[in-house]
Amino acid sequence: MENISLLLSEALTPYQATLGPAGARGERLVTLKNPAGAIVIERTLCVAQFCDKRQLTDVVDGFHRDLLVAEGRIEPCVIAAMRHVQTQAFRPVLDFI
Image 1 (cartoon, rainbow, N blue to C red):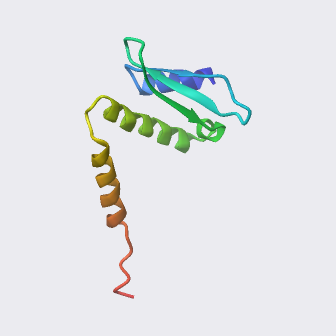
Image 2: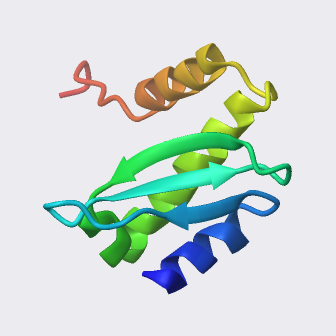
Image 3: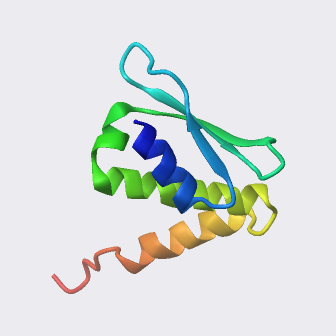
């Protein structure tokens, strides 16, 4: 798991990622700290998210998004609007059936 911590820190530079001890079901607390050492984000992740490359990529993407919000570089409503547009773009059209 130490490798996961290093990979997360590298992917989320300049933030430092640390993993807490494993919980009863293998879940881990991930803490992101800014360069000054202040905690910016804490999130509990299940063990499956560390074992599957696709899920770990989703975790990093989620942290990137949350950091943008925490830094004030993007508003949560913008993320909601982007998700809405994506949902509409892939919605099946039933009129042609």
